[in-house]
Amino acid sequence: MEYLKTLIILFLSLFLFLQSNAQSAAERTNYDESKVPDFELPDLLTTFDGRKIKSAKEWETLRREEVLDFFTNNMYGKIPGELNIDTWEIVEEGTGAINGKARRRQVEIHFENNGKKLSFNILLYFPNNVEKAPLFLGYNFYGNHTVYDDPNIRVSDAWARNNEAYSITSHKMTEASRGAQTANWQVEKMIDAGYGFATIYYGEVDPDRNDFDDGIHPLLYADNQNKPLDNEWGAITAWAWGLTKAMDYLEQDRGADASKVIVFGHSRLGKTALWAGAMDERFAGAISNNSGCGGAALSKRKFGETVEVINTAFPHWFCDNFSVYNNNEEALPVDQHALIALMAPRPVYIASAEEDRWADPKGEFLSAYHATPVYELYGKTGINSEEMPGIHQPIHNSVAYHIRSGKHSVTEYDWEQYIKWANTILGKRNHLFSFNNFSRSSFFSFSKASIRS
Ligand code: GTR
Image (tube, rainbow, N blue to C red; front, side, top):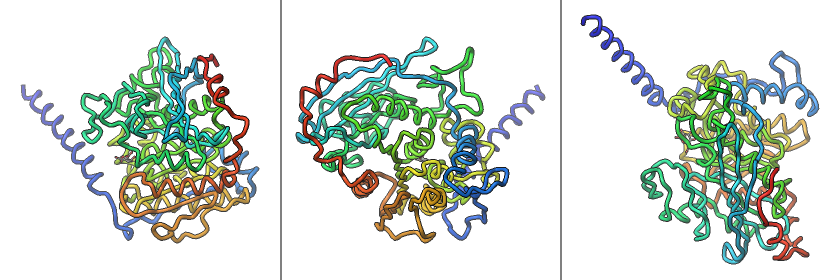
């Protein structure tokens, strides 16, 4: 009896200790610039074993791979195998979308392995006046039907986190939230500027919860495996994988110019966009909107959200190996500037919001600044000054940055900047008005049935 009592007391104390520790990590959040620790940022142009990188070629042959490898095995986790699209089918399409300016297409992409199946839906809009459109590809948080008020967009029946603002109860998305994120997506502005738009509900690829029995993970388990190994994919890599599969599809869609796909993401999906861009060099550019810790922000500053806090609150986002750096950011042999540099020489845009201190705007800016030396190896212009630009003073180079007023969100201002920047990096809208021998019938003749790939 005494023994049992002691055991219970021990167990309770351990529980309380862990509780208070977790709380104090979040409570210890530093928002004071003067309390940012001194830290040394790993030099992007020196290999882990001390060799100096002097050219783009040396970056590619000696350095890029080891940096990518570090992020793969110690932070986001690796994709444990190859899985190609099994079939895809166009499940709906129409013209006259977006006030008559665009064509809409909804495509279901199917995967099958290990006797298990997964499907996700891509919603696409293509501007009528462009034959092969460059496009923005990005995940949405609450279903494809939220991005624009279009009654034809299918409502996903995948699991969603309950959210009153989107009328999601019992983890089901409904009609009530159709068009609810129109302001965050600005699809009409994209179409007006000659861009296509592709979006996927991220929960169809992997539900955002600490559970590895669902989503894409089980399709690539080895026999008797039921969770990823310590260096295998967390949810961010799973989502990034989905973007690379969307790219596989886009390469086959005649409406898309697959050489001009800019991958976009906000917040956790901004982390995902950067990681997808790093892993898959087919993406022509990447945009990280307010991506914060584990995205664009430097971890070693420990400002706002920290590695320990993010790994505690979202244990499924990163691979298990990443917890080695909980409250131990000093030990990281890379920081997030290295993630941004993995995009080089392809253009990358980092954006912050003034009130989004949790995401550490300054840390996001400094990452962009410190990624610049790698861009310079390619003769590209990055961020030239360590001084942060003022609010609403965007820098639109191969490495781009802006900070706007307001909160953690994606706004019309953000999209106006992304479109302007895309116009410069993708060649000054020269894709526009190249529309001549394209006809409705060629659009429909393409969209027959599913293919096997
Ligand atoms: C927060 C998280 C951030 C950010 C954000 C989001 O709760 O701490 O890292 O990703 O969620 O995705 O909205």
